[in-house]
Length: 181
Image (tube, rainbow, N blue to C red; front, top):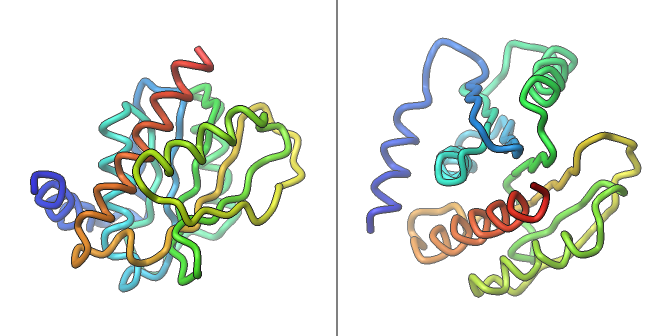
């Protein structure tokens, strides 16, 4: 499985002296994974980086279990990146121990069509246990989606689920960038 081997390499290459690993790319999409639980989040950061590379998206991931930067500094770095890169969509990816495969919340400015495209991307990858749990009331110049991903979808003991998750995210981002351009 080529994807799994790539994820193992990515997982082993993000440990460095910096607290945040930031990559700027040409797409108008930013993927974020700032979970401090590196034990239970083992490959979700690598999946985040893989999906970003596959879609030319920018990303921000933390590299340590406890980030030395405070939350305000992190948010300022992210806002700076959003403005600098003219980001149109932010996807915040988090691990979850939920009964659902994927739960998501969106910003109130995200249109219904885009939400349905997100759900369709997961369903087309045979991830069907999806639930919207909240709409974030925020007035921003970008769309926001927070994804809570069930642990089984970033566990290499279930590589078919890892591939389904990665492909669903790639398909959605490609659809979104084609639709918004």
